[in-house]
Image 1 (tube, rainbow over the protein chains, first blue to last red):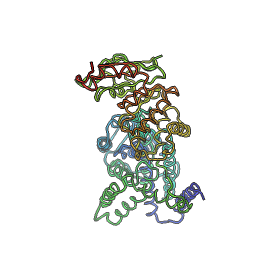
Image 2 (cartoon, rainbow over the protein chains, first blue to last red; image 1 turned 90 degrees about the horizontal axis):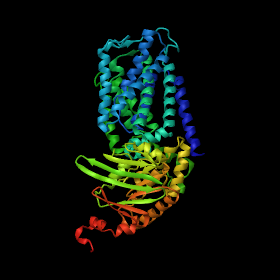
Image 3 (cartoon, rainbow over the protein chains, first blue to last red; image 1 turned 180 degrees about the vertical axis):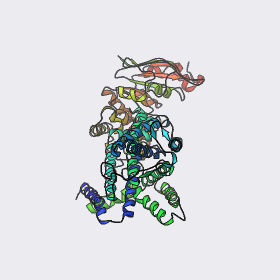
Image 4 (cartoon, each protein chain N blue to C red; image 1 turned 45 degrees about the vertical axis):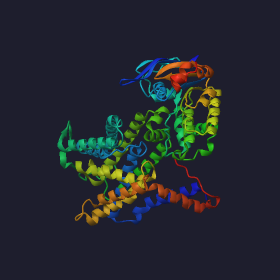
Length: 341
Length: 241
């Protein structure tokens, strides 16, 4: 067996398990937890295009979730447009917003960039909370929108059980993972990494760093907004505090940092580890210790940053490679070099 | 034909004039050395040419075209590549990855970029390190990586900023050979260097600057015996009359 074959086998196995899970797992609670897990893995993978590859730390991605959720919901409730179409419109609006936010903020470095993105997303939240009408569109201020479960079916992106949502978000996650994999191996991926690590050297090598970052930002915010629509259709209730909240932005960043930003597997790993913590702490300590999960995240983040600054994906990848070496039996031939790209 | 021509270049930082009415030109295929004591303005001049700093005054022509205030990435695509005195590797990536970033300047395809990068690594006797993490390289290897990356962009002219500083004597000799090899391939080379042995061996012509001003120009022998140059390096009392 070659390394590639084992990798392919493992991936297929994970795929089969993921697709088959709803057949075995009948509990709606567990399906709900899994759906949110995939959703957060999706959010974080989209975030990773900027936060990981481009080496900056955006902390305002909830703004794009909000733009996606509000756009499709307003269009469907007030104009009867299918949420699927609204999802694309929301994505495009979010991409435009992403570029507009990126233009001034990408000139900043480090913490200043993070703070600026927080300011933008909080600004959007406060605006939505205080505006009832934006031109012809009703925003409904702080109370948000309840989506009445009428005309249930695929066209209206509304289903009775959890299974359809499960499969939709799973396909979205696989799609975005494939997309980031493709980007990371493309010219843009190299340019983003180079510009993130050493902008001056990157510029001297023919890279318009600011442009590469803006392209990544546009793609990232577009993809994030698509999941915003999913969130709205899944919960059927959105309000500024739920979809444009700092909590959401922070949780995405937590997942990325702990899982390993800049890698393909990092966001998924992070979501796998952190989402259950957050869900179970809400289930068991929601009444007595609300926000416990954030304390746990913080502690885990500190530990990970001290001992594994490149995230948990690094030791796990190493362990996986060692396991593969054992299976293939290359260990006898001495140290095997692993690529760093 | 002059591939690079600088006329009366001036660069001020606040009240400090770092480069003062500097004029020089490089013929295609030549190796031009730029020397001068510490703080003479060599790197500043380089940065003006490479588009990092906008010049305060004067004109810079590359292949007949005025390039004042052009952005570094545009210049790189036009065929002007440079290395940095303080090396800037993409530390978390492999050597091959670093060089591929450079080769993307002339292609959009990853496979082509990889092929070109491997060719450059071979040319620089650097293939065996291709999977090494750039952050783990020695200083000599990092300097070589700087050249490899710049070379991968397929430049017409290469600006080398102290690529031999910090190298062992044997490494210096190897670097001299590499630079000569690059010139033989038709690349024009503009080099800043402190190691006299190397610059004397390499350069077709040498320009000496001091306090941003050109104080001498000529063949290595001419420059080495120039009174002003000796003064600049050693001080007035050492001038042999």
